[in-house]
Amino acid sequence: MSLLTALARMEALRDGRAVPLATVRHVRLAEHPTVLVPLRLAGEAAAPLAVMAGTRREEPRLFVVPQPRNRDLRFAFFADLAGLVLQAVAAAQLSAETLEIKRGERKGETYQRFLDAPQLLVPNQGGIEFLRLTGRSTRFRQSEGEWPVPEEVPLLGRWLTWFADRSDYPGSSVLCAMTDLLSLHWATGQSPLEDGNLAAQLAWIDPPPGRTGPEAALEAEDPLLHPPAGPTTDPSFDNEVLAPLMAAYDLAEDDGPARQFAAERVAKALSTQLEPTWELMWRGVELLRSLPEAPSVPQRFEGDRQSFTNFEESLAEGAPQARRDGAVAAARRLASLEGAASRYAVQRALDDPLVLAEHRLNGEAFSGEVVWTDPENVNSKGLRRPLVRIATDDRLRVEPGKVVHNTARSQKAEVVEAGEGEVLLRIENGMGNSRKPNPGSIPEPGDRMCFTTFTDEFRPGANLPDPEETPWTHGGPPEPYEPPNETVAEEMSHESA
Image (cartoon, rainbow, N blue to C red):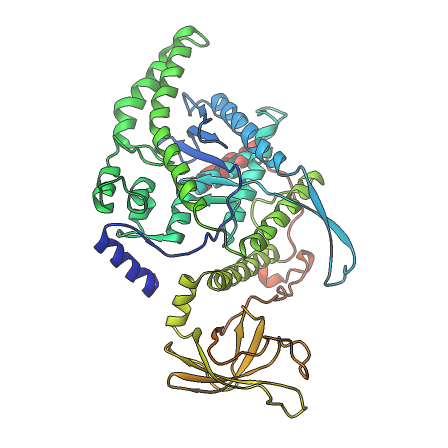
């Protein structure tokens, strides 16, 4: 936890209401995101109980498994869920753009990229892990053979695996946990662990009229008023309500009216556990939508769209989805995740003064007023390189020779001197013609400027060998792909659990 976040939590506790940590929204929100509230059977990591899902608050859809231990019912549930998820996937594939490659060996070639990408929202990290495990336990199922499943089930598994893998990328918006999104933009007066309770977290951010955050959060923690947001149900509900209803379902005659009645009772009981969280999810969406979108969000969404396009192409080509990454694929993914994390941190700081304040506090950025300039200064080559002296109250941790950046003017400068409360900079670019600079491109006394030691510039990816050239120290070239059978898929499910 950063120092400013800790101070914000203390302020929230003092005032009884959450404190903003951002002035803009650092995540994309689709016009109609697909909200999923999953529940699973206690003690069974991959056995679903129910999902309430939909793209509109007033039109929730409920999918229920009246007996999760029944394999046929479980995969019928997955088939129903596949219809919803694959519909969202198909809706994002309606239009595409043509782009030109500007770097590398394929420079000048063109390619297609979808203009949209689907978005799934779940209540918490547990919901993401449930979808990840569901994907891993269904993507290798066979639609033909001894134990066939509906053909859309393995396709659902492959897409859920992509959603879960993409959610690991900082700034991605295709699969997000609502508790994480709210924590990114507001600090409550409770611990980060307690923020995992969506009802309590929203009670701090948007308490009822006349109530403080602590009072509303205490009430929100009552499982009778606000059942857990999943994926695990409340133990008392399991023992006192769900177990007798499932027992009645098991005792009822197959395909008879008694069994149908028992299934309806199970569905009604589970809906009481899901409806409160469904409303909380849409309250969270409204709160996030009240913030203006950060300028860098569309750029990060391009990464989601490109990944979405690439995965769709791999499905169309029949490319295999391996059980686990090889050495080269794992290294590429790690390098990609590290690059995404670095860019995300920089972009958030450049977009948001509240986030930038943390960097000013630790010396990675400084802001101040221009008190003196020498616009006619030239370097050894006779090129104009103005000198600018800035007075600042921020902590300075820059030394002469350090390059700093001002994104507002798209300029970089070199530190000439750095002392107590002042820093002398030499502007290096962003003036147009250095002999006759553009009007307003040279700072003037009285201007307020902010410089950072970091910038959002393109960085080439890691240079890694082809998978066929994996060295023996890392396991050698990967073995030829063989599609797993039903038994292997079952083993994977138990391993993941």
